[in-house]
Amino acid sequence: MSEDSGKFKPFVPADSTLPEMTATSIILGILMSIVFGGANAYLGLRVGLTVSASIPAAVISMGVIRVIMRKDSILENNMVQTIGSAGESVAAGAIFTLPALFLWAGEGKTDTPSLLMIALVALFGGLLGVMFMIPLRTALIVQEHGKLPYPEGSACAEVLEAGESGGAKAATVFSGLGVSALYKFIADGLKLFPSEVHYELNAYKGAGIGADVLPALLGVGYICGPQVSSYMFAGGILGWLVIMPLIHTFGGDMTIFPGAKPISEMESFGIWSSYVKYIGAGAVATGGILSLIKSMPLIIRTFRDAVRGIGAKTGEANRQNRDLPMQFVLAMIVISAVAMWLLPMIPVNFAGALLIVIFGFFFATVSSRMVGVIGSSNNPVSGMTIATLLATTAVLKATGNVGMPGMIAAITIGSVICVATAIAGDTSQDLKTGFLVGASPYRQQAGEIIGVAVSAMAVGGVLYLLNAAWGYGTDQLPAPQATLMKMVIEGVMNGNLPWALVFAGVFIALVVELFSIPVLPFAVGLYLPIHLSCPIMIGGLVRRWIDKKKGLNETERKERVENGILYASGMIAGEGVVGIILAVLAVLKLDPDISKLLSLGNIGGILFFVLLIATLIYFMNRKTAEKKQAA
Image (cartoon, rainbow, N blue to C red):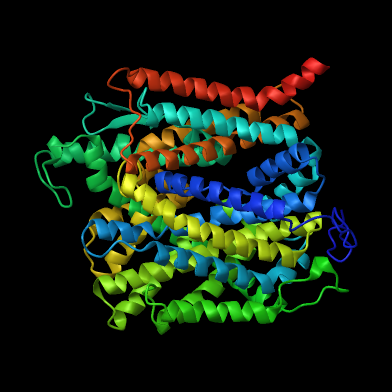
């Protein structure tokens, strides 16, 4: 493969006419968009992280189209992952911000947002993200080929091109999904054992330790790897085994704001929710801003180069260099902005709509290029959203838009921009995959619009369902990112935060930065209960074990790591799907709980989690084992 974009030959030539945007690919893509969007919404509201859906969607598509339907079309599979991955990005943007509205409603400060309002905010944010990316495709994807690697997009193209093994890979994803779904139902449906194992360390007052013994967290740890997992776990250790015992020791019988009772009477969760959560919030906000500051030279260069490249031509016209017409792109941007301004269910005035277009175009441009360098997993979407909220809330306050109306307007603007930023990064990764395999950009862009529209309609229902079942800000759904965004807006608008705790988190983050440790994963570990980072750490250790295992050649090691990633992706999707099903049962007052008849307790939870780890190791090694038996 030549690194010169002018000489690059995609997997499928431009003059080939393979099926691409078919009824099969659209329907499968829509299903993937709903499934992975819902699963990521549940995961993000629980742990503050989402995972890419492109590769699992592509693998499942290959299993259906190539193996079951006996069709051979790499471009159809690419269309499925294009549409399917949009659901994950819309979900990420929505759950990082919109649950703040439910939290305010729970406090009696405003009405619960309508389904239509959530759907429209997600829809317009997603449409703007796609539209802002389209004029940049030639500059970023084509002209920068060989310079911008787009790691997830390139990896997805490799999976698609290796589609002959799609059946085995799809089976691995489905196995993870099935095992995880059954496990989740036994744990949180039947409640045969507690999904959260917890022990108070009575000899070390104020401290606690435990783990949420759930498949999604194990899968997240495996996919993130040992380094990121260890940063999160280190943050959890600092909070639960250092700061909290110190608070208990020095606080004694005092009642200190924002706590409501004497510290000596609090158990570990009480100390965490009253004090450490605010320290963690300061650290997370600082981590997001630091990542933005460090990226500023790249951001400025990205914006300048991308804008210069708008409208560039790339040789003779064919299906592989056609984008959706620029007239359509501009019309969609204008219609979206005017609709947000005029529609009464979206609390945005003309100035707010203008801010959305300005900030949205800037950050969508930045996101589109940055994911080409550092990957979607490291894209500082939360940092960009925090920066947007700080600026927007300050502008609204300065112009007299104060109180709850001003805060609702701020979170709405931030939500649209957050979704746009996430979708722009996803679109650029998908277009990179399409460029490598030889897809038609205009069809992919139409597919992105379909994925955005479907997932925007679905995400409101998911948010309502999860809130009705458990409520945001609870142990089941802490909604960490949205809670942080809410605190940022309230801090700027009202100044009612416990600033001493927040600034303690700020300076902890700065110390971590001085040690050259990535601040965001550490800060997220400090912000969330240690029960989440502990199983993530175990998943990271499993990944480290296979990465360092002796006696494997590079091909075998790569194959086992990939099997593990596919199985872990299935585990995440399976838990998310059953989590939503259990939420439906909770709303319908149908409780399959059998814990009063039989409960295995914490020991049962630990033993089942060990069995879950064993399944991950088994499926990670299974294909290589089969090859050895065949040999």
